[in-house]
Image (cartoon, rainbow, N blue to C red; front, side, top):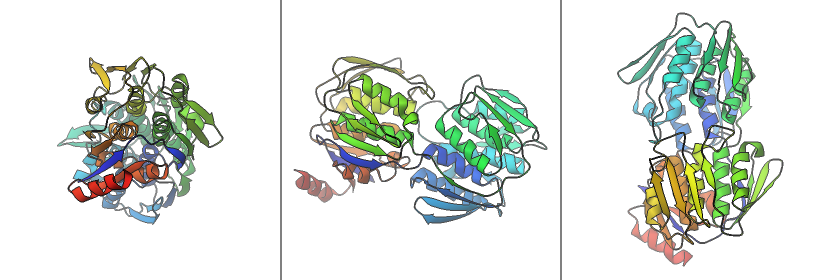
Length: 433
């Protein structure tokens, strides 16, 4: 097993280039199998979740040409099955988009229930509600989502609670249904917009993505397209907060600043300097951050995926802060690891963290238990005095491309090593001492 070893205390400085958005890429790859023509997708992040999804669609019969590490071509003209029931399907959350895509194109799908990080309950009842409204019969049988329709008919769908996954999944199916579909209380996240834009580039007729009402006129056929995925707002936010936490000075490039407004606002609130440019932001952390209160919300609010990084930054703040997690009930599991590093965090009723800032964290052996919590532990290691080892880094590599190399380029004393290799640990310590 591999792990990260980090020597903290070095400010991050320089420039970092942000990769394509994982959450958009998962929906777009699923959408690419809805045509029998070739689709070219650029700015694909080179991460394990994406590779797993590509392997799954290859198993369905699609041809995937990997042009380079960030560009692929997909041709789904030879798909021979609508069933995907494998361990790979269960490893990632985004595999459920194959239900919407296959149902839209073939009027049938059998996909294993999805996996992903264990951060709390993520039911698919809203997805099922949407498919059912469009005319499909949906059952959960032997751990699979089984959906089938004789005909898909456009309709009005209201989500009692906004859901990114359900919005994208219903959008995939509805774009090839007969007539018009209206999705009310739709999710407004940037990757919803990106998937809609991609579908439109293939000939779909989707309007209103990015608002809470999306209108879709069904079409009979989709065609090929060339498309480039938007930058990853969560990766950008991670580097922004890491710069602030290490008293660094980092130019975060290839971003859409509007997507980062909630992160920028909180950094400014705690005294961090943020300068926006057309497609980049510069973050300068000169002093100990101040305290604040944060509540996670759906976009454009402060995103749950950035809560671990916010919480970690606040461990060294001046004063007491409160972070309320309103999206997932198990998102504070990483806080137990921060306690090993000297943080003062009390989690109340599972969804609220009371954080009393300390002057510094101390390095320790910690373990990632999910993707974003793992990234926050790396950030904590960069902030801490001494050496930190982060285990279970496979979680982190699910969502961050070349994570340690990008950190190294910014001056971080950080390496990926085999957990059994004592010599590598000693060599690293000798090199950075």
